[in-house]
Amino acid sequence: MKKLLLSLILSLGFVSGVQASSEGVHWDKAPNKVNDMASLQNGAKLFVNHCLNCHSAAYMRYNRLKDIGLTEAQIKENLLFATDKVGETMKAAIDPKQAKDWFGANPPDLTVIARSRAGSGGTGADYLYTYLRTYYRDETKATGWNNLAMPNVAMPHVLWELQGERKPIFNEVEEHGHKVQVFSGKWEQVKPGSMTPLQYDQAIGDLVGYMQWMAEPAQSTRVRVGVWVLLFLLMFAVVAWRLNASYWKDVK
Image (cartoon, rainbow, N blue to C red; front, side):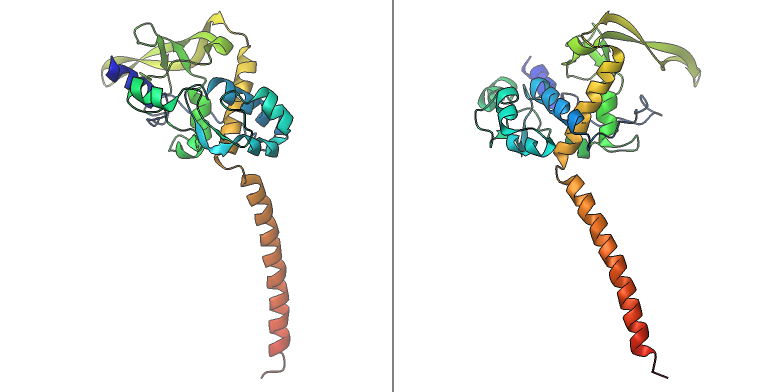
């Protein structure tokens, strides 16, 4: 039992990589929302409400959320559940000592998870976007859930109330003389969630966009500064070229 619980906490869907479409489900392209303030704010809300129960983002402080347009009052009123100080890091709601006593280890940190999952199937954001949208009911599993992007995943579907219950539709094909089940790309909605499929996809896009931003909050500033640096170097190159021409024009 202890080993099962340890496996559940440590894997949580993020420990093992996902293979590309040749060996697993194709990774869907995640929408790019790292510059959409409204989307990032909604993603932060989803992250705090659904991810911080078990996971931490130990390298991210709540007051950094001001960078996505939230005021300190909004952060305190809506996002501070595990602490009362806006300058604290995002620690999991679960007590670390209890987690270690119960499961033998603490759940993995998610601060830079969006940057650590890149592979041949796409970016880390693509993986997260696909993974969080491909859960389905499987009563043969201990948690009652399985996942197409990561078969036999130990993490339960923590967002199932939003998405509802779905069943993937498989086609039977023959490979190397054996009949195998291949995902058709279609789903059957077994039980509705509080969101429509489109709303859920948009919400996951917001959540993944926030996790992308959280992995590198300064990325927009870095890109903006980089553009100005390149423009400066281009202008300097023109000036240097004209100075060089002027210096050597009388040299024979």
